[in-house]
Length: 138
Image (tube, rainbow, N blue to C red; front, side, top):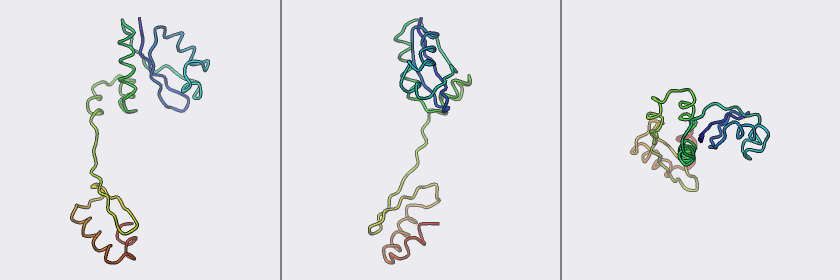
């Protein structure tokens, strides 16, 4: 048998691992001999585990969960797998970078500026460089 497991560290971070002997591996982590990451964050607590027939399956699951966000790991730990698909979707935000003389500013769509409004502000800023802080910083 093999296991994929998640430990919660003293700093509230998560460590994901896999092993053939869960009890032995947990004892290693608690003694500071399991992994450098957990050795610096003792004590650790086992918060989740999955059992597999083959070591390769546990290892593959470990690698999958290691790439997950904290929110996805917590959904797994709390036993709410129905939340995983929604948590897997990335939220993209369009970034706009504006060069004004020697200064560079970044605005994003969530501040309520359209592309034309950013261009209009940028053009007025270029005409009067002393106005930069008044128009872009609120």
